[in-house]
Length: 164
Image (tube, rainbow, N blue to C red):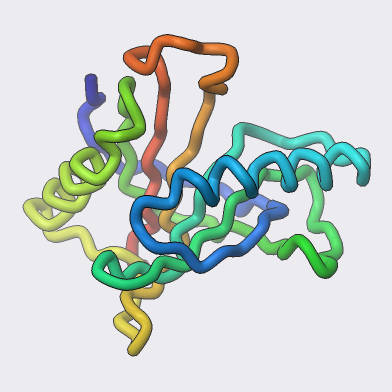
């Protein structure tokens, strides 16, 4: 089930993440990386300021993607050898919410991209030799599959920053 796409204003949001280069499918990387992120957050006594997310920095679906597996924080933290830190930029975002199995997220992303193209919204992105580089392209995960066992009830919010 999908909500209708819409445009929302988002405020700037500090975050902490682990950055990885991956190829599709990357479920094994998720399974290995998220526990590392939660362990780092716990050992540094950081209270997440919202649900975890995947930030797609560079996308070349045929080859490689650069993704940050992250969580929002109340303040900007210091990076170290494991984590990167930064701030998700404020601005207008195209967004929709999907309830269902993560296996369908490629198609769900296509819906939001198609809606933006239809309405002539441009993403805050630029082509690079490594793929399309995005200012902020997010998949946000408000619920935890370990706590919500039915995949039909999994929730994913897509939020793609639009060009100013």
